Amino acid sequence: MTSSVETWFRQTVKRSASAALIVAIPANNEADRIEACLAALAMQRDHYGAPLAEGSFEVLLFANNCSDTTVELANAIAAAVPYRLHVIEETLSPEMSNAGRARKRAMDLAAEHLERAEVPYGAILTTDADSRVGPTWVSATREALAKGVDCVAGYIDADPAEIIRLGSDFLKRGRLEDRYLRLIAEIEARGDPRPHDPWPNHRVSSGASLAVSLAAYRAIGGLPPLALGEDAALTRRLEASGFLVRHTMEVHVTTSCRFDGRAAGGAADTMRFRHENQDAPCDASFEPALAATRRALIKGRLRRRWGLQPSFSQVGQMLALTDGILNTMAVSHRASGFDDFWEAVEALSPVLQRRHELRPSGLPNEIRRAEQVLRALKANFEPPKARETIDVPQRNHVSRSTFAPDLDAQVGDLQSGEGIIRLRTPMAQGDLAAGHQTPETAGNDIGEIFG
Image (cartoon, rainbow, N blue to C red; front, side):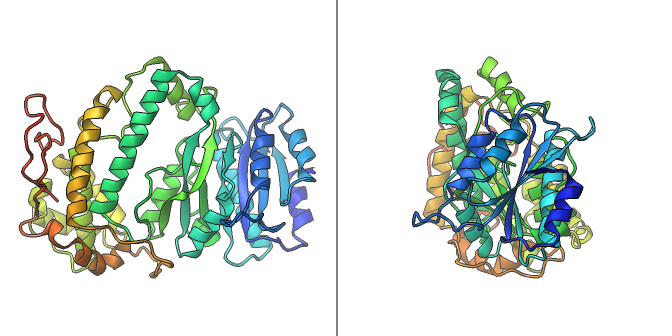
């Protein structure tokens, strides 16, 4: 049955929640898709194919400002699903009626529900009403959390039937971008390895598939109150506060490719613009392969030194910063942690500025360069393997570079000598300081990438 927030709390406060996991789903006029969303959650199974026990998790559907039959359809399906479905209906003010703040409201209500039920070690999962979670979404998320991480970011796939209808050019663009992102994700995993987030992983933090422990969620003040980009802001805030975020390929969701999204400037608007402009720039996070490699290697080196007694000798020249400036920055950011320090370094170093936008037409060349970089990196060292459990240090803004001594041993010769990495493989030489290649130098051999 649909409830107001007050009625719902009165009804649930007297009984304990049967599950430590609750899925928060914001929905605004999702009558066309809500049944598929809730049905996918009803089909959850473990990795052996057995259905999850009834009551393994709960679902909170936050129906905000709905004027269609979203609520009625959800109530109709409630009796059939093997989980407790809470349908909360609320009208948000115009300034609050956006995708980001609706998700925050849904997750905050879910957190309060777990607290009222005194559920130990609870976790809040979230997805979108226009998405369908994979059949092992809950169990894979639960397993990842059980290994000691605080947040799990799942992988997002486009609805195949919808994306194919957008035409071959749009599909080709998506395939190029996905291939390049996979290569860059592996370069980052090898250049700046994180034991709690080992390769294979990805680089996406999407509200279509996120999970966070109740303790971590409360520790950072909940989901950032943003109209747009609240999902990525959540993982950034968690990492900046010393919590562990796992970007796993084992947790996956299929989401819609619609052009009529709720958030102005959001994913739907971006997709529509790129559909109309086939060579429109890629996301701002895309950068040339050599620039991305340099960024990952420098970040990895700084992280390892941060975890020991900070000493940035020879690193400053790679960043066009003096060692004194780096040491001063490290001292000033010691309390807030490595991520804040790195953000400040990126902002200050001219070497790390993102100067060149990538377009789909340039991705084939960048893919070739990234493949060459990876061959060289693989010849030098292997990233740390996934652990069955993660050693979780104290979280009062402690950097995850607590793992630094092990990483330095594994990296070995890759970052030896005067901070020079020799990649003995043919690729475009380019301007490493600027992080790009010119047509005149394309095809030459590269001698060194400093890391």
